[in-house]
Image (cartoon, rainbow, N blue to C red):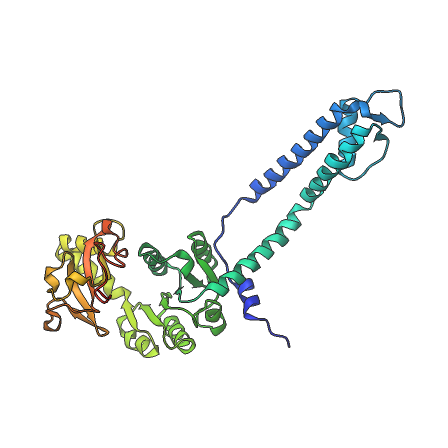
Length: 363
């Protein structure tokens, strides 16, 4: 039994974002174009009516009705031959104007079939091109509330939409992701073939946001089997499932119910604190949390001396709180996690928030 190539699979199973257009609008444009061709051709024939003759009544002059009749039977290729061009000008016009108009008219008549075939060809070409250039990208599994917010957060922090792939089995979620401008892989993310079509073997990160913890475990296991080095972030509903998801291969596990419950509790105990936490979780206004490289002129300083509000330091693949004695002085290669105004675009400071170079660059 013959097997299909990955390129053919990608062309058949990837849904790339595209501009949607109403079928009624497409039909209306075709009808208007067909009418325009007919009207234009009728006017040309009528202007040169002296160069045409009615075979059945040679002595009668060709009028507007004859022009409409001639154009109709000519463009539809019926061609009864009872009205014919006899002058040189009329024959040249038939050769170089009416014949191309006839071809255009026929293309319009079979335009629906041609459009479907062309659309399929374009889709296959786009999918093949997408697969060739896709790599080191982000895969979002599940496009519910959490997945949608995760994808939008990536985009808001400088990741191009072309570098985000959504995997979801539900048609409504697929439509929403495509409308949001993301490439979509339809299917169950617990299956290897679906994940391979999403390119997890070449991906940089995978974000798993399925609606069920058992599906999250299976997806995490399968993703880790396909790519042992990528970074996996998974969301679970219940805290008791966190160890299981970590054992399945997730690098980081977010407990959605605990996070929501904690935010509710904080908002109840301190409305102002709840407002600040909500501000940090909302993109675009107020405060943002960001990770950036250390700048050259910040080496040797204490975290509290930086212009940004440092809350943690990433050093030697470990995260230290800003008050930890291990990071009393910042060193080359450190990355700082800061809170700053959203208007400063938290993802932008690469190579630096104030135009300086990285701390790990050669001076």
